[in-house]
Image 1 (tube, rainbow, N blue to C red):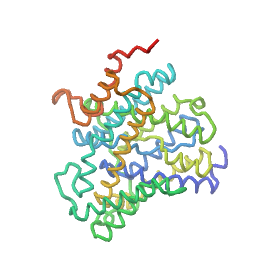
Image 2: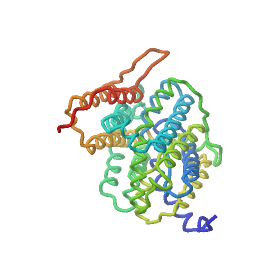
Image 3: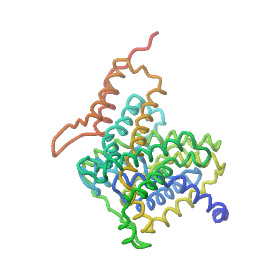
Image 4: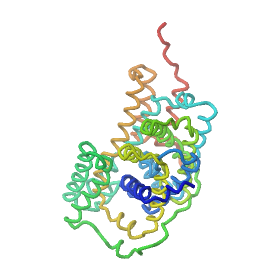
Length: 410
């Protein structure tokens, strides 16, 4: 093994990368009700597995995926956390099947089955379907709006300030500050919450310094599996974009070596491993790619240390308890931007495709996906039900295969 992996510079750079990823990494479990310490552990484990599969060639860190936030919230409400983990495990398996498809047939086949006219609106549904949850939390309510957890007059100001700081860092931030808008928004909102006296520290006081993360083992319900598997479409397409981005940064073509099939498989394996322990699904982190570009440190061993440090921090119980004291409106304010951003990613994929969205075929596919997804359409009863992203994705794929394409002019 190259001794450079044990150099102080490599270790410190790895710690810096975790700092860049930290805000987004812990935000997903905090929004979905999962344990942030488990998320740290599974991000570390997932990243190490990814580097084993890709033979340590790609300077990438994997952690909690934003694309799964809304589906996890909905799935937990319907079937509970263990069944949600079973569904996420199956989603990781879908990633790996896609990697085999890419290996056998090439990327073109993937784009043929999942063109932008299907993927774009499905991603938009992922972002917008649970927009009311973000708004309720920003107003100090529980996600379903049934409970007023924090007085509205205080909550709305905390949410607005959290959102404002996040926007300032995202739009006007320079250097490393541009890479941590979510972390900045959480810190700012938490600071205001402390001043207003709406932070409760009982959980931190009661927690031990060191403890095992609260692992949750998966169980399998086919309803949750059907609900979750199609969600893998969005991060799989995003993964291709991330691989292209890191390839441009380092001037190496990772789509060829180690190959997109390996990176996709590593991503899927990381998500499957995370669900085994009760953590959110993993995905390649664009903000860490930005940090790689900024520091010009292209050594993949740095990410190995980022993963190791994340695993070590997962056993600091007081840190996890402290993260869970973040008030609801802080999260709600940031979720408003976050869910909207996911929707914009979907819209952008449609725009970049250059498709004529007013053409009857494309109009039908996009319209049906959006209305059925955002409107909460479900098909079936208590024994069999398709709803949410799963219904939208299947509907979009079927319509794309069935509806005739317009003939190109001679």
